[in-house]
Image (cartoon, rainbow, N blue to C red; front, side):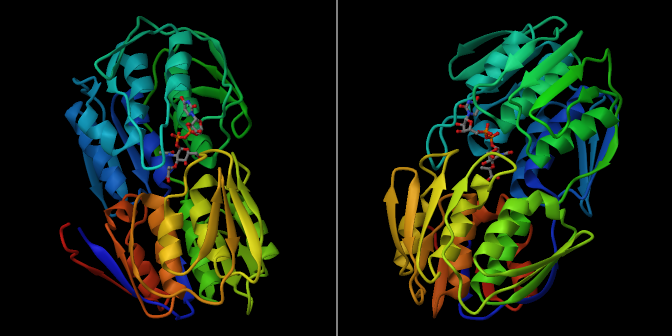
Length: 420
Ligand code: EPZ
């Protein structure tokens, strides 16, 4: 298993280009099942999760080609309707095939995802929503078994705002007979991007960008050609890389309004941020002010950025509290940051951080995608050498992260790690 070896203490400076959004891509790819023919997803990032989704869809008969960030999806002949445990346990987003398969073929067999590094992540909202559209769903041997004739529109109210459930139900409803209303829908930009793809395929969706979506089902949809939005979490991670190292970085190919909560918090912490058409520039202050954050649904501060923020606050000049209101136990990075000298106390779903003057390099272990990012950020500022082990986690969601960091002046290299 590969590792990153980082010599900390170098302020980053320069410009990088942000890749396409992982969490949009993982919804757009299964959405292609809905429309027979060849669809194109431009600006698709080269990520492990995209490879995993590609191999899953290929087992269903989809023809897929990927080169130079252009993903070509041929859904003319889909002859498989199953997402096996092997795929789903590797990547929870595999469940996104449920809605499109049941809508177009009236059948689907999808493994329950099981837990992840930070605890259970139920899929009850996906199941209840698709049941309301007229599918019969049973659980058997750890699998969701779904059957349906033509789906019909329904009024669906989500008790909890869920990105995945909103995406799955919106995809299924786009081929249902009649109108579907989704209330308390997720408003994340990745859901807006999915709606855009469905509309390009001929779906009729009103309320895009709000938490109330109205979908007029179509009898059929046609393939489409879209450009995937930039990855706001990658962008936020690189802004923090500039901030934590006391540097000066510019990001290109971003949508600044997708990062408004992150920008606001970085300015509260003393950073100067300038946004241009599709670009963001950050200049770090001499010392970081402590700033509390509560991760919440969009447009709040993203839960996918709370680990990275915790790293930044570990060297701030005071006490800051990072709370996650989405996932109460998404704190596997805290014990590892403590190994680097951070002073963090966990209290339920909050990390109480007392900034220290400096972190010191050590060997640390990645446990999940965003925890890995937080450890790399801490290693960039820690004195001496930091080794971040099991970087296959980071390769799931960041395209060539070490190359982008090297281009900003970071001393980071990938090494084949010891098996253990
Ligand atoms: C998406 O996961 C993202 N993944 C996650 O990013 C992100 O952390 C999450 O949204 C929250 O923003 C993708 O888009 C592929 P949810 P998802 O359904 O859809 C509860 C990353 O690092 N819930 O919005 O699985 C759930 O337990 C990944 O890129 C139910 O109770 O998240 C959680 O508390 C990690 N029942 C809350 O809703 C359900 O049926 C939000 O989950 C579904 C969800």
